[in-house]
Length: 355
Ligand SMILES: *Cc1c(COP(=O)(O)O)cnc(C)c1O
Image (cartoon, rainbow, N blue to C red; front, side, top):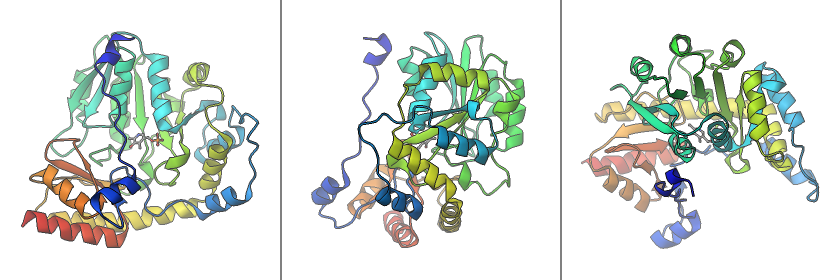
């Protein structure tokens, strides 16, 4: 047993929705705690799943060649730069497993996605955290000042989960230039499609320009394919080959590969999802402003806000059929932007709690 694992707490899965409905005597429960796509997935994926036959007895294509070529074309990167995983969760695990050893330091801006820290601890590495600025943005100067001889990895979640805030490409580039070349900078763009403040918001060219920069993407959020577990990283070629030595050979099953491929080809679904989400996001920001509730300007499909008695508010929403995410920062809640009627209903409920 690794020393570091004794102190970790197991991930506690959410109660299955059907059980929850029974327990709370509710007909309908809407999960707005996991940043899933409330508009489902591309109808083309549903159609493919209904019509295609899968050979259960055969191993999948370990190289995910068709998906790899499609992603490489779509993003304009080399196919050897790509590493696919069972969700970004697996890529995050493999990054830590491949590049970290005992005592290495991993720099994170907090609050952020907890998987970065947990995986570092599994490798007996040491997470070092720098709090965000008051406006929820990354304190790049603070991050730079926290780099030591032991720093091996720096995580930039952009836009960040849970603050929802987006850092410009220019700021990221300026930061990357100051980081020693033996330190990996990993930019998690799980929510990048939802950015509207900048017209070309992705840092995806950086892995072709810097030997130490990696960009991560997933099919779980805007593509609405969370159940299929497909994520990938864009790497400098040398780093991709190290990752490929550690990756389990048949990690992605054929159904998942085909679902991601079909989803990628339906960019209209992506655009529609973003348009609807952004429209609702604007309304949420307006609601918070009008009611004097502090929130961070969101560039994602969720919004992070401060509210008195956050535990009670979360419970009140739950008892009315809406699950939101609590516990990411004291006194703050994170809520996935849902369908229009649900958003309106939650806004009513929130007003009832703050009266
Ligand atoms: C949801 C999420 C992921 C994980 O996505 P999967 O591909 O479903 O494993 C990674 N990073 C961030 C910031 C996320 O919010």
